[in-house]
Image 1 (tube, rainbow, N blue to C red):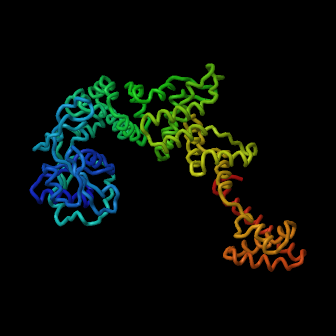
Image 2: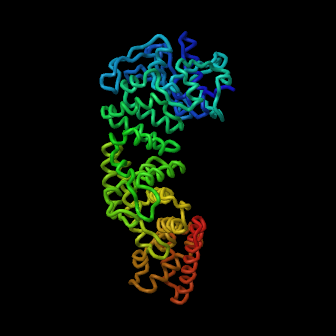
Image 3: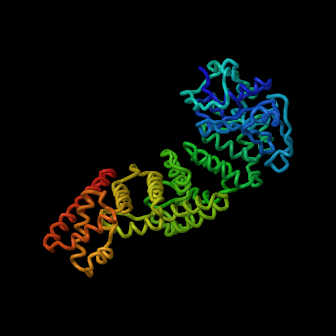
Length: 514
């Protein structure tokens, strides 16, 4: 079986090799191809220096100290519109535990692979020349579908793998293992601690014993890492298929205490008779529900934080303990945490809002439409769906069998109903004041009759809903007797009620409510 490698990547490698340079796929894209995942990005490494790479690829830019050149393509696939090509490199000491003191370019691929973090990311792939003939980087070609299953070494026709650190064996064993001495690797860049946990969570791999020991011992070095870098790895962990795996490892290793101690306050904090899980268990199960539904980061974060205020709000113990105002406390905590972690203001404000209102009360026939309208105004129509999603995560995280019971479906129906424009005279391009001016009549029964008569015509033919037409008809209707006008008005009223009921019936069917 061949790797299915996008044409843009094959073309880039062909151009480098045609110029006499070595060129390899490397890192996460090779790892993902070997386990049958679609690569999120493609990295090429070469013995060409940055200046030479730019000569070969005129549509490129070079704005970093690592030698990486970003090559611009004409691809229709957003993942392939820029391809990163990096020279083989060596890295010196990491005095600040974050960045190498100096970058040196290497001559050999093996030296470049030796500086990488984990064995599964230290595999390179050379594309066989037979696949490279006739490729041109400027061609617009979509990426191929990824393989449907993982590839073993014997199935990789079309490429040859360079794997000096046993990455393929670790992929087969589902192990995350540091390249070389793990203590040195984490000393060089402490963010690798977060990356190991994130990869373990994403791939459902175990962390090799010595690597795990090094993670535990070096976890304190994360205090030296810029919060933006920790934030990015944390977000990637939350976006994995089962993010609770990563969070449990962070708690076990003491990492949460470094950048998110508030979340760990829920560990072993019991709840009341309405809950079978601790606050910690409930929050991470709610997060996993959001991940299972493939909901976006803002919903996942809100699900994780929705009860973060409970430990501070708790009064009493046992089945009758209470957590009054934990939603308000959680809102303030969420805002403070996400600001500290350098999330954007819009993201922070939305999570805080969803946490604040996740306890909205709704029982069919108990809550008025006006109270739902007030909730919509506070939350914003655009965020109501995400609020309902957080509520679903809360329910599933509590161990209940149904994510969306009848009353929540009915709430969805009511929210949609209240956000639509009802069938009413407000839809018309004329109002009572205008009709009074046209007819010369004061406010009275006749103005109401004319409005309803006009409504009958508009509902019958929406194209008549223009200022010019309605003003003309209002003038004409004014000359009719009150009895004739009443007949037209009654027809308009009946049509309006019938159409309104029909539209509401459609929304009810959509949400399976009566």
